[in-house]
Image 1 (cartoon, rainbow, N blue to C red):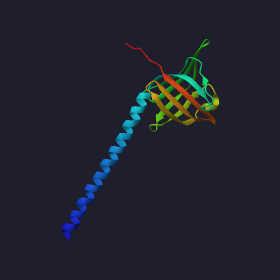
Image 2: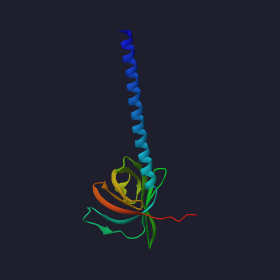
Image 3: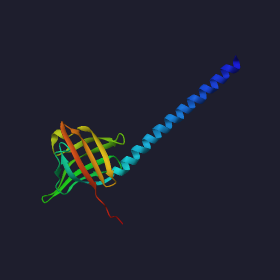
Image 4: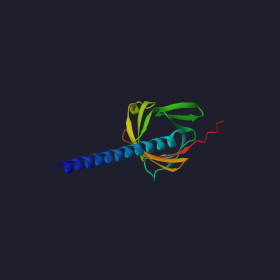
Length: 152
């Protein structure tokens, strides 16, 4: 009887360790996936088109830029004939391979300040990202193109 209990305890320990290793691997893969997505997002993106629905697509004026930083900050600026305007800035956090959250810390439109929203995204290529979501009851669909930076 003692050997059976001892064998049972050994099996339980092995199964427990296997489950722990499997869970740790899953968590590590999930974290790795989030880091990979975040590294794809980091950089300067220019708004190509926007709308409240996919069918309601409008071409964006040139110079609407969103900069995603490695540190989780983002800045949205609009460059025009009158100069450059900071539209809003805040933080972002990748939640999965299809969503990230955005928290607006500053916005020209005061009703957006402090607002958090979930943004759904898909990469069509390394240079093109489609996003959609709702912020303060405003539905949006946007197409962004990554700006190529030629740094030496």
